[in-house]
Length: 426
Ligand code: UPG
Image (cartoon, rainbow, N blue to C red; front, side, top):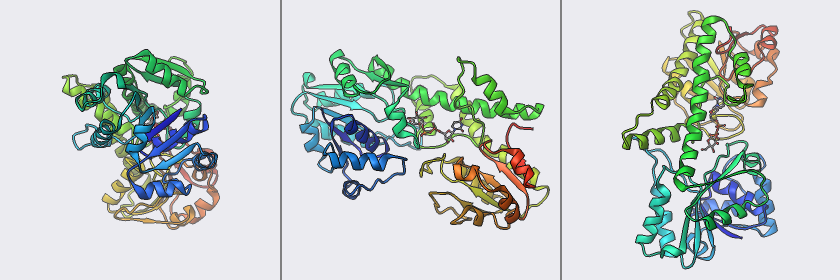
C-alpha cells in the first residue's frame, strides 16, 4: 500500500518507520523543511531507542520517504494518515489548528477515493467534523472514509509498543474502510477492536484517563500506607496480581507527566464539561498529582532536619526514563519548587539540561552531588538507579536520598551510609 503520513513528529515518524518495515511504501510529510532535510540524512529529531536504525533501513530499502510536498502525496496516496499534534490550550481544550490546516490541505488535494486515518489524539466527534468539513469543501461523499485509529505507544518503548500492541482500535463508518486499515497492519498480531468512530476516539482518551487515575490512586494509597507503616510497593504488587486490577501503572512516585496524560485528561474534562458532565475522578487524579510534589517537599524538609539553606542535587529531568521529552515533567516541576524555597539546586540528566532559573546543570551525575545535602532521584533512568552508592555517599555533604520513583534498593543505600527516603514506605 502507498501511505502518506502527515506530521513528522513522535507518532508520525515511528508509525512511518513501522509501516515501511511491514512492507508498505510510506511518505512521511511535514511542512517544516529543516526537519525533513534532517530526517532524509537519517537524523531523528527525537530520542527513541531503535528508531534511528529502523528509519535508516526504510530509507535504504526505498520504502520510506520524508518530504515537504504534503498535498502532492495526499493526492497520490489512497491512504492518508493524520499524525499532527493536538497541544493543550490554556482552558484545557485540545488545540486543533494543525489538524484544521491538514483538513484544508486534504480538501484541496483529494481527487479519488481516500481513506483518511486519524492517528492524532482528538476529542470525541472530531472524525465526524473532519468528514463534514471535507464534504462542505466539495469532496464527494463516496471519495472519502474517515477512520479513527488511535495510537497507544509510549515514549521510550514506542517501537515495541507499535510492533506488539495490546490492541489495535479501528473506528469506521463503512466496514470496507475498516478492512483496508486492518489489512494495512496485516503482519501485526494483536487484538483488533473494530468499532464506531466515536467509540474509537473515546477509547483513546479513556485509556489515558484511566492510567492517570491508576497512578494517582496508588500515590494516594502511598500516603495511607506510610501512615500505617505499610510498604506501598509490596501492597501494589499484591493488589496488582489480581488480574482484574493488573500490575502496571501502580508505581508510586512523583506522579505522572509527559505530553499525553496531563493533556488528555484536561481535554476529556473539558469536552465532558461542554456536555454538562463533571468528571470528578479525573479532577481528583489531577489534584493528587499536583499535591504529590508537596508530599515530597515535606519529606525533604523533615529529612533535612532544620537545615534551611540546603544544596539539593536532582537526578533526572525528563518526564520519565528513556526519553528526551521534558513536557509536563514532574521532575522539573519539583526542581522549580525547590528553587522557590530559596535552595541551591544542582541537576543532572543523561539527555537534557533545559534552562531553569536557579538550577545549575552538571555533565556527570557524581558532579551534581558534590557538596549536596540531599539527592533526589526524579526520573527512573537505569544508570541512576544503579549508581555506585559508596561513591555517592563520599561525594555528598549530607546523606539524604529522596527516591522520587520508589525504585532504589534501600538496603544498598543504607549499607553505604545513606539515609533512604521513599514514598509510602516505612
Ligand atoms: N508513571 C508513574 N507510575 C507508573 C507508571 C507511569 O508515575 O506506574 C508516570 C511516568 O513516570 C510518566 C507518566 O506516568 O511520567 C506517563 O508514563 P507513560 O504512560 O509510560 O508515558 P507516555 O509515553 O506519555 O504514554 C502515554 C500512554 C500511551 C499513549 C501516550 C500518548 O501510556 O499509551 O499512547 O501516553 O497518548
